Length: 200
Image 1 (tube, one colour):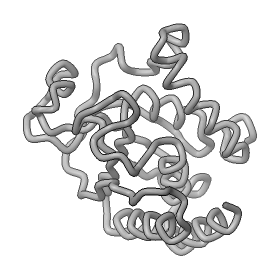
Image 2 (cartoon, one colour; image 1 turned 120 degrees about the horizontal axis):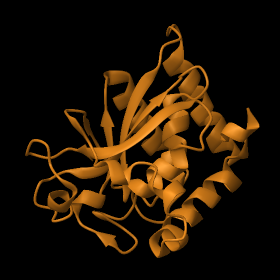
Image 3 (tube, one colour; image 1 turned 90 degrees about the vertical axis):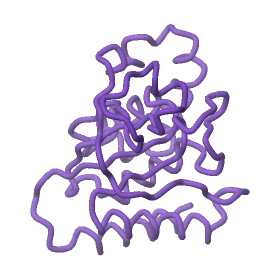
Image 4 (cartoon, rainbow, N blue to C red; image 1 turned 120 degrees about the vertical axis):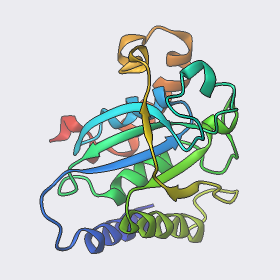
């Protein structure tokens, strides 16, 4: 794992060379957006993270429509981050280690295309970085099964309804939060201690 982290850090340095100190955006689908939002809210270098929908074929979808799987959207988080603190490679490392990128259109008991693993890249650098990180994870046999994460160009992001925002923090006693979201947040805190905001 240490070798993997070093290689990802090298990818990050090569990607960020010559970039000005401006914020960047990442749009990722890793299953239920309550989980991914909760994880990235804890990450150093993340300025803002909001839940929403991307990758579908209708405008302004509502949650009840997305959950049918018929709109084509994935539940995603859109992350605003400081690349001088957390590179896109860092963002992806956390992404791949806090969900299962080998299960097609599902995360645990959440089943459907809306729960697919997806990287919606915003530029060519992000595309190449995502491809390199996936290639690296495959080469190092991090998972028993092949990675099925979709790497596709970003088009439109639709902000989720207000009650989805900061869901885990506001609903920690809810069963789904206790049994699904909380373990992912704890895994992030355990594996990525150096990436925690509290370590700044």
